[in-house]
Length: 267
Image (cartoon, helix red, strand yellow):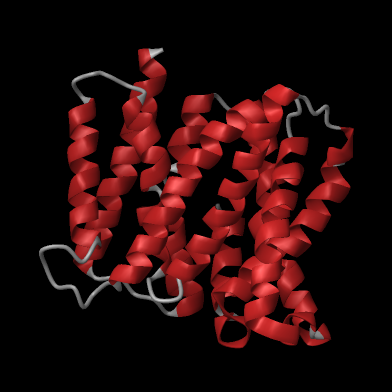
């Protein structure tokens, strides 16, 4: 989480130079090269049953990155991640049927109500940026569902193959919008750092963590990601949230952690 949010903060500093689409292209392009070298997706066994899930997985992965970077152009990093987190949170809630889940639903809705510019001061959060973040959350949910099917037989190599699909779609878009500045040698070290921090390193760490931790523990820890994003925004981008935004973000974190624990107990 520290790696991902540090990479997101670093990426945001390059927006004035290459824009959000350019950052998407750099992250997916360089990140894919690293992941392909590590996981060697050409060894994957393709068959009719996993081609469509893999394609959907790659589209969701690329779209999730693209929409997230579009959102943090105008929305504080912590708020954007909290809004994006509603995707996997919705999946967790749909998977459980216990009465206590109404508590998590209420907390999540309360958090969203105060983060989104709905029914209160709309000047605090850009509505278009908020919609981008919610769109990224929807793609995150699709990414989880399709990744489970696509990765059931090929494991970590699925990440590299999916990243390649996303790169083939969004790298040309980034090049068209940002132009030749993407290929400036001076930009390469920072772009490589973003690719490592945002893709190669966290994906590799997550694979290790998933083999060492119970799923419930992993999911609960991941619920802290919006807080990590907010802290990253404060430390690296001077993005200070209001008290109401902190309370709303905390409500979503508690809802996500609670929903994760409830789902695992229900099984």
